[in-house]
Length: 524
Ligand SMILES: NC(=O)c1ccc[n+]([C@@H]2O[C@H](COP(=O)([O-])OP(=O)(O)OC[C@H]3O[C@@H](n4cnc5c(N)ncnc54)[C@H](OP(=O)(O)O)[C@@H]3O)[C@@H](O)[C@H]2O)c1
Image 1 (tube, rainbow, N blue to C red):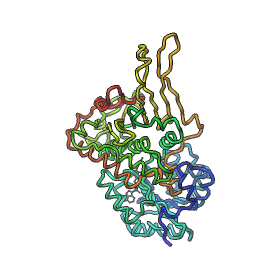
Image 2: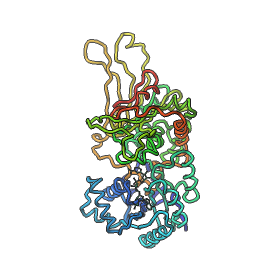
Image 3: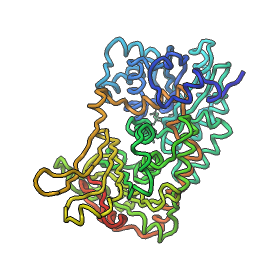
Image 4: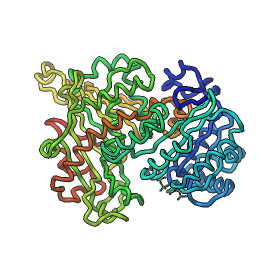
């Protein structure tokens, strides 16, 4: 009997429906053995993120019994030499984990290496053979992880189909595929990739990863909104003035210049991470925590974003920037983008972008969503700032009391994960003066538990067959349909005079023109 990825799962349906709330406990012990096939196993992402995540999950007992990893890459290696390489990676990139003890020996023994070029059909036959040997006649449960350069995604998908690896033998078998970002570079290429996937993998076999969704604090947006009575009644255009989403990085290219030249910050960060956060902030309550129920609501948000199309609209609602030389907050002098390695000295790639979006729906009519993302900014922070409307000026303003400010709820996604609420309070003393004070919640100190890496959560969910935190086909296409016309207009419009902000600053001054009067950008 042939089973696909989503139809047969190794644990009870009720766990499926509720799974965004369940990452521990007895359900995990019910996950049957499975194999993760890792394409791009000698790459940077594997060393830095995927293997540390898997080993960390192993040490916490989060992996199913008899879990195995079959690594697939081009360089000639044996199982033994590959395991040694991974051990070095753990020491280098995840020193919090002990790569020299008994647990590592146990974990490493379950890792195997298949050497092949991704273009070589015969390599997939050898992979198939190796999987059969390792599964020893047990049900086929296979998770294919595409951690290769995106140019190879379509090649791998086609070869998996031709080799019959898109289907699994046995009533309890499944075959699923995780696809790394970027999923396309514009609407057309994302559609092409979806069209190429469809005949090979059904939608419920496909897990398009956006590691932001694996972050505890991003998941906490839904909990904050829908597990608390106090926020939801105010969460609309009647009470909220504007919302700002900031994804600010202090780093420059760090050797990724060649990649970034073709991507820019909008493709790299805004189309995926920033818009994902926006959907969680703006969505209606889903009818359940089921993957499709959540994703249905997210897609509705994306479809309600008013298109920014045409040169005039794009010029009025977006701002691009590129950093020049400057000084970081730590006092280090750093070079400009055009001086980075593998970057064109006349590059017009944007390292900063800011947008003013409007959502044409009942809840958010008239509330601007400001989004900014940039490299080499003054501080590393990802946050959402929800500014409430000002109170009517009938009491304190008339009595000439200064200091009444709108309430602001800030959700800190990284670092210093947590949330804070600014409220007005009377300053001590004989006069009636109002001053904003902050109520603060910190994830770290409140739960006294380390925040797990997003990849751990996402890989575990894919093993469990829960796609809630992964993007659906219509969702990525809806996100690209917002961003693509902007990228096209930028290509036609004359480029701003780059560089237009100093490394270590908060981006180009022009970004302020997007804000309405009385609003300022988040400057944590
Ligand atoms: N690195 C990150 O921090 C990061 C973050 C988010 C997303 N991603 C995404 O993750 C994916 C991988 O990125 P990466 O930085 O890990 O890339 P990378 O370091 O360049 O690694 C590429 C991997 O693909 C393999 N490969 C390339 N061509 C091949 C071929 N013809 N045949 C067989 N194997 C081949 C390489 O194997 P050999 O070395 O053996 O040739 C290597 O294992 C990309 O889609 C990227 O966008 C990466």
